[in-house]
Amino acid sequence: MRTRIHHIVFTPGATGEDHLSFIADAEVQVDGNRIVYAGEAAAAPRFEAEETIDGDGCLCMPGLVNLHTHTPMTFLRGAGEDMVLDDWLHKAIFPLEKQWDEELIRTATDLGCMEMLRFGTTAFNDMYFFTDIMAQAVRQNGMRAMLGHGIVDFDESCKDMVEGVEMAEKWNHAANDRIRFSLAPHSEGATTPKLLTKVVETAKRLGLPIHIHVSETEFDVKGCWRRRGVTPPAYLEQLGVLDLPVIAAHCVWCDERDIKIFYKHGVTIAHNPISNLKIASGVAPIAKMLKAGCKVALGTDGVASNNNLNLWEEIKLMPLLQKGITLNPTVVTPAQTLAAATVEGAKALGYDDLGLLQPGYLADLILLNLNTPNMTPATDLESNLIYAAQGSDVRLTMVDGKVLYHDGLFTTLNPDELLQKAREGSKEMHRRLERGGVTNA
Ligand SMILES: [Zn+2]
Image (cartoon, rainbow, N blue to C red; front, top):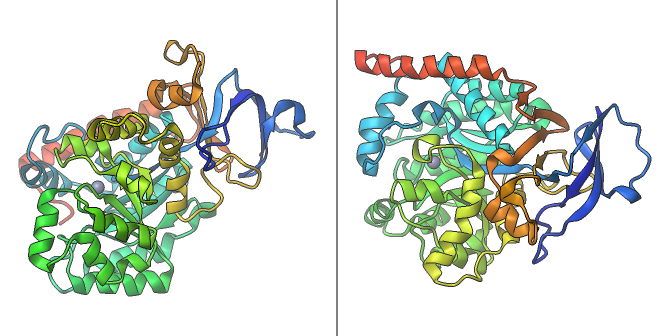
């Protein structure tokens, strides 16, 4: 499909400059899944479009990348509210997670994808179970995703790794390369050194990145000191994990030495400010990390600790929290924040042609309504984008050159049917739990 989007305000995204740049009357041309032109309407070359989208004065910008989530946890929205982490996991989350089956996972994944598309997220990085079903959902609903089977292994058997490797071999680069896979050992505390060593060997052999939770809570870090005699980042460095491309989720409890380790190895920190606040894990030292030259991207984490997949909330909170804890209003700029929500995530997923709107880049883009009370006046559009925009301002979401959401309509998902199935499915999980049934163990 050849698509022209005109009557738009345009930003190429966070290109590395101090400030975001905008063009008032612009046009974007998409051929297949690639952008072929993005810039001033007056300078646009002739283009025979099969589909023309009137942007109606919206801002055309790169789609958001959610760099850490557990998508099917949409069904666990509201489970175990206001509990301490250990109780939350063992009394609320794990018992419900034992009730999953393939059909429920499929619906819960589609529900999460629908929510992300509605709020302008075009790609996500996920760690969960039933990744075969999740990949089938993503293949059909049109999103871009990196999936990883969560590997939890407290004994030395490493048997939980088998499925992760099998799924990666089956699905990596599937669906026109919209689907990629990582190896996803859950965390230092939920794995053994033997397992992590095997993960490193296998990831090297298969060319896969690693997705892992790192230093999420003070408890995690104290436990790592006790078990390994070092911090989690130092431990991962010792085992060679950081020699691979790594997405490290959370990184809340990190000291200067940890930050140096992240910088040295080019680790991407997936920052989940809302989840970290909700579970009372703390606030990651993102301003320090950015100052040290670390790569930082944004994630929502699973819905059970958020309670939604609307990345605009993280976009606003990331700079605010850093200003609050450093008592310095100059830290974390709008450009750094938008980079964390788009191009840094895209790079961490292994794409060097995603996250900016430039010729040759993949056509993952959104249209954001500027004609709303909260976006008026646009005296400073880049600050509006970070501090005033709402997820519900997104009017169109395109992934890989295909429109998946436009003004309330989804092209690959049926919202009425899906919401009904999701309500029933979630009830069914709770019924199974009450009956004491365990279906996936
Ligand atoms: Zn997580």
